[in-house]
Amino acid sequence: MVKQFPVNPGEMVERADRLMSAASNRYRVVVQVSRRAKRCRHEDNENSETPMMKPVIRAVLEMSDEFTEPEIIGHELN
Figure 1 (cartoon, rainbow, N blue to C red):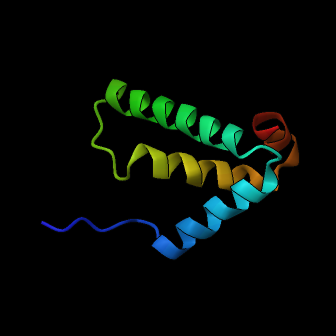
Figure 2 (cartoon, helix red, strand yellow):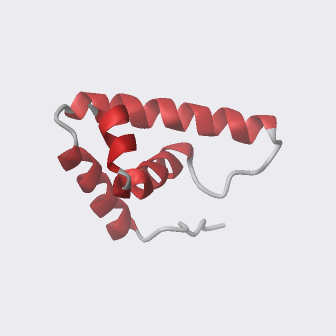
């Protein structure tokens, strides 16, 4: 069975690039995304849900959605 990604891979790359360019330190972006992905994975396990997307993809999408709120990005990425 072939799994369909809920997000276009090109859009995913664009969102990740925006996150990287928003931060002064790329390492911090990677750490923040990994922490968010770990949290997402635990939430899915606690809720006994079958995840529709991988935790890292979900974390990047959530963080890029928050990109429009500068106070959140400034706090998490810097």
